[in-house]
Every structure is written in C-alpha cells, then in structure tokens.
Image: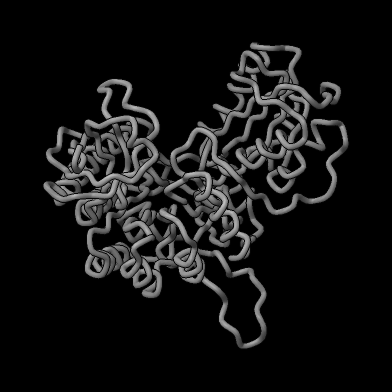
Length: 435
C-alpha cells in the first residue's frame, strides 16, 4: 500500500452502480471539499482517485478492477481509494491491485477525509447528507439503507445487511436545501426503499412509519418541485401508497416495480414473494387508481432452471404489463448466494437468444405505453444539456417518458408543458407549449 496522502490534493471520483452510490459519492465530494481537498477537472489531473464500486454482477466487479488498473496507468504516483459494495467481501483482492492505497467500507464513507489525511478510520460514519448534486438536473436523496429481503440471486443483502432509515425531519431539511438550489425533482432512493421506517423505534402499540408518511411530509415543503420514488418492491406498494400517489400533485405518477420473472416456478426459486398473477393484479390496480401512471421494471433471463416454457411465461407476462421501460439482465452467478449453488444452468448462447427476444418484447411494450400519450400534454423536467445527435432539448415527464423537442436554452432546468406529437422508434417527439 502507498503511504497516506496530505490534504489539499486534487481528487477525482468515479461512481458505478445504483442511485444510492451516486448519492454517497456526492456526499463524499462535499466532505472532501469541506476538508480542504480540491476536485480535479478530470482523471488526468488527479492526485487521488476514489472509485465507488458496485457488485451486483460479475461484470460490475470486472469493471471495477479495470478502472483501478486504468487509474494506476494514468498516474502511477496517485493514491487510489476504493469503496462501495465490491469492497465488503473482496477487500483483500482489491488491496493486491497496483496503486490501491485504501479500501473503505460503505459504513465508513463519512470518514473519507480523515482517511485520506492519514488520520485513521475513526468511528462509524455519521448519517450522510448533501447540499448539491453535481452534474444532475435532478437530485437523489438517500433515505434508507440495507435490505431485509433474501432473493436467491442477489448479493446486496450480504454487503448491505443493516437496515437504516433517515428520519423524516432530516429528509425534509435536506430536500428544502436542494430545492433552494434550484432542483425541481427529488428522487427518493434506498437499497430497499419500501422498507423505510421498519427499523425506526416507536412506542409500544404505535404504528411503524412508512414511505407514505415521508411523502405526506414532503407535500408540506414549500417550493416548485416534484418527488419521484426510485425502485420499490411489490410488497411495499400498499393501498395507502397507491392512494397517496393518486391524490398528490407533487409525487410523480411513475413506479419502478421489479418483476424479475413471469413464471411462478422461477419466482419461487428466486425467493420472490409473489406470483405472476399477483404482479399483474397489482399493475391493474395501479393503473385503475392512478391516472396516467407508467410502470417500469427489471427482468432476469437465464436464471438456473429456466426452460423454454418458463421463459415464454415471462415474455407473456411482460406483454401484459406493458412497461414503459424494462431493464433486462442476464443471470450472473454471485458467490455466497443461494442461486450460485443451484443446478440447471442456462447456456450463454441460450441466454443471449432469450435476452434479444425479450428486448423485442420490451420495445413493443414501450411503444404501446407511449402511444397512449400521443397528443397529450406532459410536464417535462428539461435537462441542462441538449441531445448530442439532434441538438434538441430533452427531458423526462412526470410519468418518466423521455421527450425530445425544439426550444430555447432558457427552458433548461425548468418543468415545461410539452405535447407529445409523434413516436419515432424509441424516440418520443413533442412540442413545447408556447414554444
């Protein structure tokens, strides 16, 4: 390992993975800037590289190792600090890589400045918070950590096992600060967002708080902004949550609810606590109660034991759901998970074929979903950069449709009324009101 670096050095942060990681990188950025460090304009100017890793798939692990080696080639004299989920179970392997000076567990990210200043690791981190969100038109706010579920394929509960909920008052203060900076969309995120509140101690006989209580509190915050929920598991999408979204003018009409498989046998092997029929029933309820709500989802293909019939059930289920977007993953064997030891491995060629087939289903489903909004007006948060190819303004609607349209730069960072005029393949083209 290299010797500790001094303060007032230039750092560069690279983030892999989920919204929680992106939030935590921003928190580390603010801690470092507040401690006298300077952010480098790019990786070529850095004295310290900080890599915030992901370990959801083996490809994520591979990318982390590649980036570490790339940083070392760019500047062999620089210190490299590695943090994030890959560190939790693979710190020994990471420390063997050239240039790595530090590894930092997720629960110690709040001590990043102490570590880089040679002051030791200190105590457990304080609860992170942010005042800005560099490079984004919307701000992510982490309100929850840890996962209480035990899906057979997932490594996340092994690397983030401890549940932790940020108190409503702290979230409200953080959101107020971000809104005052001009952010018009706040995305609430967590490792298992729906579990927010389950670890909060209440007096005997009192009801545990839920994400609905969080949303109600944010309704009372002054300012022109909207709130979006990131991924939430089916079991946390209660009647109360559906009702809160339905009546709100602030909460986005969009829910990302992972499906993973549309076959009951595979769902059971995945240790997912629902059936395909149950999932479809929930989607039907959401659409009947929340006008204009869009659903996005995740699906895994090639899970151990998945045969042609199981895959066809998943494809059929996806057609019935008609998600606006579908994130499709091929099964990745993760050491320490139950699925790692399962028989019935699916060959790489079959996985690729099923992946491509499901992409076609997802594309048609997206088209059908977006078609429902032709000639309708949507509230679009305009991105701060134009599309590199077309030069058009772009932005996401309340229900997460990405729309492209002509307009002036003055619209950037604002919520604009845009009418959907046509669909062009995967693109949705609109015209801005009075534009």
